[in-house]
Image (cartoon, rainbow, N blue to C red; front, side, top):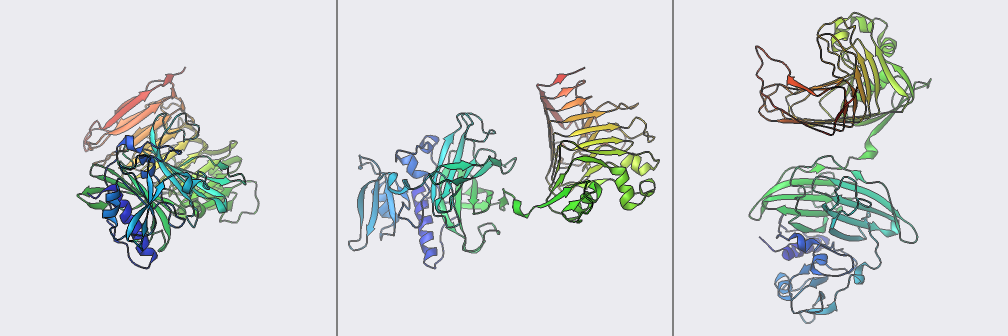
Length: 563
């Protein structure tokens, strides 16, 4: 494996080649390991660990790389190269020295002791602008009290902190990479040079290991790169665009991160000798500016049918038809679903339809209700399709977030039907219910098999359910358990999902049941909830034609039973 310093030199030589119209000839991964001790850094002393984690710039005379000895520098560049290099040779007893190639004498000249102030005194702590004119430093840090770090990072947890700045444009950006997620926040500079920061935003809920290894045992110096042909870079990075690349190694596992002007990307891979094999690039931060925003306001008399609606049903039907991420902001008021269906499709529609299941949610939708907003759906007809299969909201096997959604339903299947159990394409999705309030009454539903669940969930083959906060209630029905939330596993082979229910109040309990032939274990985490009775768990369905394994593990803590 090529040394850390040689890898840095190779990357810098590639930059020089590209700048001169040539082609980069670097390997995907030329790295060596560094210990956690080596990675501890300070912002004031130019010790080896600081040098080895510093991001060098390409145009202002700051260091282009670092070496452990003078001989290593000479071996790397026997005929010299442009730029200043840092050397931490044992013979240099007063610290790290700067070296520059003297082309007239064909020797590397010692320019004296290196000081951080030589190149960083005019820079403050932040991010990269379009010209990448000020890349500060990448360092390993330790969360102390979560004041300046994202709250999700535990006290004393180790994480990688990356700081950029574009002071002429008075903007900055910070990126934190922990062992399980990426966080980002933007900021601005005042005339005094002080930075003001926005709130931290989590780019993704979960990351595949080894995105960052838990012990950070192998950190490779970030480098400035030039996109050549999009073969090794994410396709959305334009040819010729500058970006920052960060590489990690943990044994034979590799992770690469790219931070461009607009986004963060990562990919995992494996190392066989010096040859790296990578998965496809994944984008971590969605392009928020491309997300369509829809407002639903029942008080409006002139909706435009594109971004402004006065009917919840019409807004939802249109939003789902777009097939892409949409933010739907529902203004205050009571939206009567039964009445809206009658207004849209005719007064007899719900009494005659054989296919209607309700408003579909998915495709990355984020639905936000104002605090005094509510959906009511009280069906009084006798159509078995509506009584047994219709719900105000019906989920599909793609992502969505429901925030503060309030539904009061009667004589339909559920308030929300989230059943993707038979989708066998293996697509991963995440369904989020945050601070929702669902109330369901099926006590008078004439279809005997219709259960009294406010939120009925059938897990998919590869799904994540996240329920946080909220109030869930349902009216008891003879022959059924009183469980406002019911979740059962998928019957599909190899199904495995993840469920989290936290800080919710239930006028009843949670029903968690196993099902299917899968031998993989679905985990359900239940914490901080207030329940009327203990969690119900058993097999979902049994008998002829069913092959059931106990493939559900329930982990519960800090829950209480209320009267």
